[in-house]
Figure 1 (cartoon, helix red, strand yellow):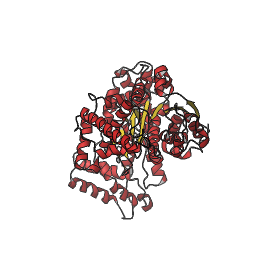
Figure 2: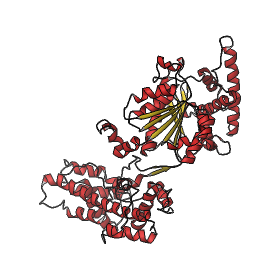
Figure 3: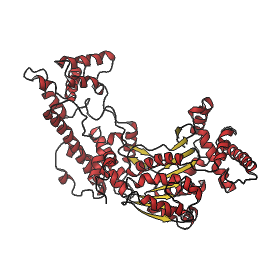
Length: 559
């Protein structure tokens, strides 16, 4: 295993736990074409554990102008093996295997083969096989990415039956300072700082943390306004004057920070509705059921905490601010200790759920017992969780205010007329009719027709030409593709001519050609989404990216 120094920069992005997820991930890629190798390159470099390429193709001369991971001497040999060889040269930490077999036969003879992988990528795979792989991923609860590129046009489609994200990196501007509902220790400390005292010297006064300033101003405001928060413009101005009244000099940067952040004192503590929905779902699960993931077990514990306390666990982090060392460390310690207490309460509930004693009353008593310091957690529960890392519980509690859950539709649901999201497609089509630059849905429809053509004809539109009849063949393919497009559009309740002819003519003109520039772009985005799915960090695509390289435009469409 490589040292941390090798992956230092990416560790700063997704942390040791994210790197651990990558280092344990096994990725299967169906296809060894340009889009496939450009995607895999960006997964090999950050250090996925294992890579498997499934492809029956051999290297042809055309591959040399498209795929940077095959060479002249590879012509006539397995493309999967050639690509794998060159990919693994990028990072000796990564192991790999090449399977020279068609995905169609593999699905027919040994679909269990795919159960071993964390993520399955299908690159330029025919629609029928892509749909089958997606259904398999739904059955086995695997993440799936479908990639398709024709000339300057391409799509990236994600699927996961259920994808839970703790670290969405979507932090609120308000943070988690609890200014409007300060806990006992925080309020006590803030009130103990006498900014009006003449005994406080100028340097000390200029380094009172803005959190303390806001808490003192808010306490003063509430005493004068029956405990309310500032809401009207007049009340907010009054609050501002309370802050200015404590200031001694306009050179005090800490008071500038208090004025800049005073909006944080105007909003009552709330829990985002999407987070609340997750916690409500979590309440119904049983912690000792074997199929429950760590996410749902900890979510249930956090839901129990929220029911008992009326709030989520404190994140325990402080933003940068002007403060002297002693004051900042003191404030930091107050937040950290409260956060640790909240984690201990959640940990107690997790332990209870895993041991099978997850009744609401018992868990609620455990939570309140730890919070109020009535007893030590070891006295409350003798059985500690062994299947959920404590680091995971801490991380969940720290980011509980921004957790997210995504459930994707399968490719079969997308492509069947009775389950297709016709309203979304129609809305995007209406945007296109109003302004052609505002929607890329015609390309989605054109590619759908292109897939129908490929399945019915057995070849890619525009790829079957000869020197004597190339124009006639292309014209025939265009007409046939128009017919496919009319059927696709009619099935989606769109006008039969919803796809302009120029889009279809462009696809036929490409003849199924892969451009390396398009493959590089799509591979970069696809690998980025793969990292999100593997590490369970950041918010992934919802659910399809349509890329129009002709005009350097992209659009995300939920299908």
